[in-house]
Image (cartoon, one colour):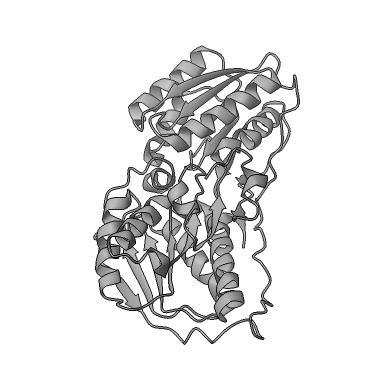
Length: 362
């Protein structure tokens, strides 16, 4: 799986989906697909998993601390997506910490999801003599104008392509993240139930196109590597924007699945999972759901205290700075950097959550 598959889905809605929850709502129409029985499995033996875990694709890099003093005398401009939501706030903190460690001056300009404001940010950075830019702005169609208005320096784009000036793209490895989640769910069901389950519900955002298919198709691919092709699949188009739509669709779906006790629920983000749990609580069926989650937020204790939380794939926005700042400084100094700088996603479970988030208190 080459890094080029990342480029196809870099659209405005794709970034907002994961980062701000501001996607427009989809049609909300559930679709159902039948596939071979769950017992048709890629693994053999009673509860033994023989499938290999997903391998990281080309472009995934490790987090690294900036070298102290490496940015002395450098000014870095950071166009922020919107400081009104949690994901960009986490990115901001990480970038600030790494710029301080490197000794670089960091100028942040909040675009507030507005291309005109992002254009003003680029002009500001040119005036201030920025030697490198981190650009996290939502409108890919506006990026040529924004590129032209800013200083002609190395540019690292965050989660949304910024052509023609980007030196490298930094963001999620969507298909890989999905595969990790699906594999973890498949492994759990193989070990606990020999891959027997009643329904597989996928909470999606169909309007973001390739990103949705990479991430949620990756979930099904990872699951199938352990338990065989998904059966009784129900795709619910929640729009990715919040829990209300997911709650309504899950209410209808659970009503159509009376008496079924092993219902796998996977989602493109945590908002949909929260909506699904709300629907299940209203029907006194929370224990019927088994959860595979994307984009971990350790503050969402409703998910992580659920008895059937299987695992969550972490995107680590708070550590984006550990990729952005060191690689940007390298680019400013003339070193060649990879065109793709993808997040080293990890599956977080009850067993290892403290390893990744020592402050976890759920």
